[in-house]
Length: 259
Length: 350
Image (cartoon, rainbow over all chains, first blue to last red; front, side, top):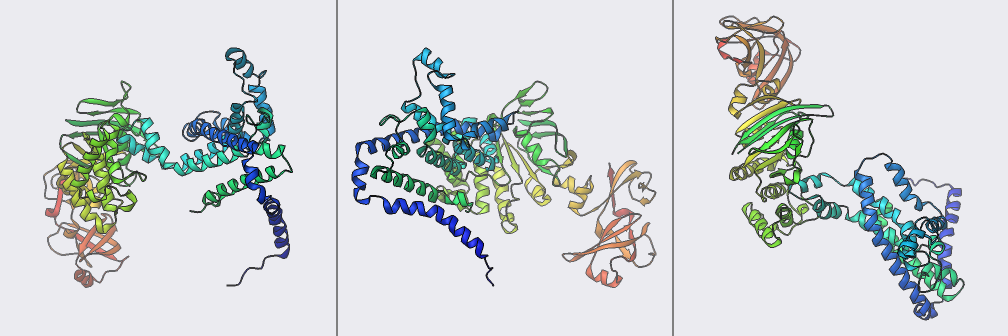
C-alpha cells in the first residue's frame, strides 16, 4: 500500500503546534531544582498548601458526587420544561472564566451577598475567605464535569436492568444503589476523577472568593502563583503536572473513545 | 388461584385490547407474530407498561385497576420475570444474581445465599456460583435467569421469549430442561413466544394474538387442528379458507364454491391439508368435485416434499413428492389444475 503523502505545510504547522505544548513541559522539567526538591516539598508552607489542596479538592469531589449525581439522574431520567436551560446553568462554569465565578459566589454568599448576609446575621456563618469557601469555589467550577459525565453514563446504560431489578422486588433505592450505580461505575469514576483534577487545579474562583491565606485558603495553585519564580513554585508545578498526567493516562481510553 | 387481566393500551403502532384468564397450575403460551403485542402485554401484567383501561388481578387481589386507580408497583407484585436476553446483572456473581430477589424482599444475607445456592444446585450450576454471568454459556444463563425469577417464590412466572437468545443447536436441549423446570413450579406460568414449536412443547394452552387482539385460544391440539387465522394456518402449514356454509358446500367470498362433506351452515372455516391437494396438467377426470385452475407461483422443496403455491380463484398450497413433481414437469409460472376431495376438507364454525 502506498503511503499517503502529507503536505509539508501541514507537517510544519503541526510540528510548531506540538512544540508549543511540549516546550513548556520541557522547561518545567529541565529548570526544576531537582536537588532542592525534597527541601522545597517538605517546607511548612508547601506541606500546608498540599494538605489544604488535597482536603479541599477531595471535599469538592465528595460534594460533587453528593449533589451532582442526583442532578445528572434528573437530567437523564426526568422530562420537565426548562430542563435544558437548567442543565446549561449548572454546567456554565465549564466555560465561564473562573474569576467571574468567584465574583458571582461573592455576590451570593459573601458577607454582604444575597444569601451570605442572611447566613451571617441568622447563623453567624461566614463562607468567603474560609476553607469552606475554597471547597465551594472548587465545587462550583469542577462539579459540571461530573454532572455531564454521569449524565452521559446514565443515558447510555441499558435501563432494562433496572426493570429486571424491580421485577425482583427491589425498591427504587435498592435499584439505584445495587444496579444503576454499579452499572454506571466507569462513568462515575471518570466523572469523579475529572472533577477532582479540575478542583485541584482551581485558581481563579478560589482566590476571588476565598482569598489567599496560607494554611486556610492557600491551595497549591495559589502557592505557585504567590511564590512565582521560586524553587517551591517549580516543584509544586511539577507535582500538579504529574497528577494531571496521571489523570490523563488513567482516563485515556475515555478521552480517545477506544475500548 | 388465577390470573385475570384485561388490558387496553396504545403504544406506537400497537393497539392492544386483550383479556386473559389463566387458572392455577396452567402453562400458557402467548403466541403471535412480531409486533403482535405479546411482550407489551406481559410487561403490562408486570406493571412495567401503563395501560389506558383495564385491570390485573392475581388470586383475587387487585394489582392494578384503572377504574379504581389502584396500582401496585412492579416491585411489590408477587411475580417472577424472565427477560428475553435474561438481563443478568453483569456486575454480580451468579449466586448474587439469584439471591437478589430474596435480598430485595428482606431475606437476611446468609439465608438468601443459602437458598440461592440450593436453586443453583437444582439446575446443576452450583459450581458456577462465583462466576460472573459473562462467563456462562447461553443455556446456563437461561437457567440462571429462570432460578433468579423463581427464587423469591412468585405466584406468577412471566417468561418473554425464553429461548430466543439461544442458537439453534442448544435450543432443543434447553427447551427440554425448561419444560422440566416449569413443571416443578406450581404457580401460573405465562410465556411469550413467536415459535409454534416452543409454544406447543412448553404450554398446556395457547393464546394466539395478532395486532394486539386475541385470535384464538385452546390446547395446542385444538389450535393446530382448527386454526382460526391465516397466521396460525401458516404456522401449522395448512390451507385455510373462510366462507358461508350451506348444505354440503362452502361459498367463498368472490363466488367460488367448495364442496365439502359436512353439514355445517353459516360462517365457517375450511381447512385443507396441502397433502390432500392433487395437481394435474389437464382437467382431471373422475370423482373430485373440487377442481380449479391456477398458476404455480412458487415451488419449494421442504424436506422430502415439494410445496407448490398456486394462485388463482382459490389460492392454495399443494404438497407433492419430488417424483410426482417431475412427472408433472411443472415450473413456476405455468398453468396447473388442482383438485381435492370433499372428504378432505375440515369444516368448523368461524
